[in-house]
Amino acid sequence: MKKILIADDENSLRFLLRKTLEGNGFDIIEAENGKQALAMALKQMPDLIILDVVMPDLYGSEVCEKLRKQPKTARIPIIIITANVNLYNEDQAKASGADYYITKPFSPLKLKSLAHQILAGDKRSVS
Image 1 (tube, rainbow, N blue to C red):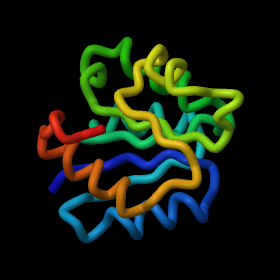
Image 2 (image 1 turned 120 degrees about the vertical axis):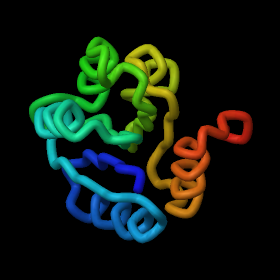
Image 3 (image 1 turned 30 degrees about the vertical axis):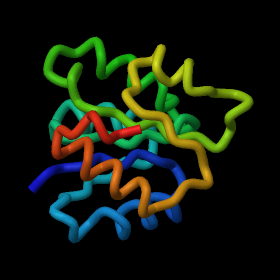
Image 4 (image 1 turned 90 degrees about the horizontal axis):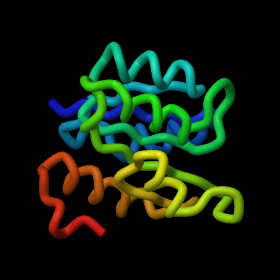
């Protein structure tokens, strides 16, 4: 079973993401702030990480940068999610080390499809 770390300070969004992804061959772990996300990623070694940009303690972009500097987490696929496209854009997400960038609101079904494609290693069809 593939493990996905969801990191977002909004309980309702974590709940939505968990309900969207669990039961589809994914084991879901959750973090409610940046420090917790970083610690969980280093300890749990998920197969995919979904990070909100604005979180307490560390922003998702900071978590992403720190994970990319660690040899054991450097290659884990990371999806950055943000609601504030004026504050944080796709170029910034890529510069921080994110592999994928999604803006809120987003389609949970498209995210589920993206997660399946990423974890199947099908990079050709991932947009």
